[in-house]
Image (cartoon, rainbow, N blue to C red; front, side, top):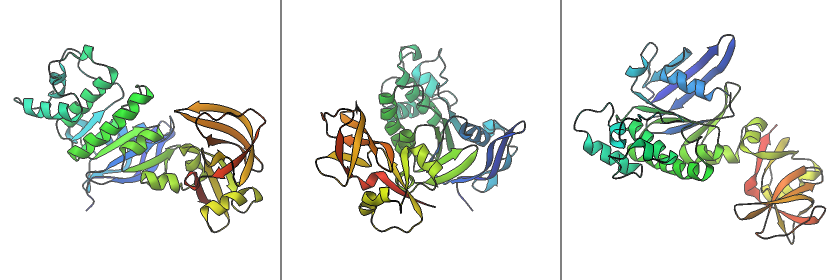
Length: 328
């Protein structure tokens, strides 16, 4: 018997449109899976179907037993949304303890410490920052120890720096409590920071499910690679791929080489040349847009403080960690 969540051939329809189209996925007990994809790909519809908020075709099961016909409030699944949905008239402690048995002060204190808000029990919700509100929402969602926690873009309303910090803290809280979770996001960095495995969706279908490192290094298709941020695709046996083939070693053909940002590195000596089209700076590094013969315009990385002008011809080395081979 499978332990945890099991989906088989799940379909969610809105009229004649299949928002989720034949998805099969396992989320073993104690693991965290991220549903990753662009807006409208069906990831939130799939989450709502698991929760029991949408009619579904196919099978949604927990520990091998179908939950079809089980009301939302009896599935033992917790929900956390983008806005947190806190009760404004309750204190932080009152929010976390909502639905718990009386005399739950110890549990509330433990959870607030877990999410980085120790001592906040008496604080009013109105005095909290956006990040603090989401921490309270997470503590409240974890309070009844749900057998499955469903999180629908819980960090998307926050600024990037705060999202990055909270993603790490969210992962730590889920692991510390042994919570089985499905985490919906359109942000690759969030998915990689939070999840044990990432399920990439597009147009209602599941394209690939893998551990973050494996997903990045071995995307299953050009569609997956493009979504992850690979920006150029070159036939492996083409002349333009010659300097790249040496970096990755012998690989079977036919295949396509996918280049992420930073596949080329601007240096004093290299294996290729590129013409500078533009330069920008991000997080202390230089990003140089270079035009490489046979490949096109890609983003190369340069040393901090480097100075290049449009039209300069630069030497390019190769970073093999920013390359992936796609089987044709």
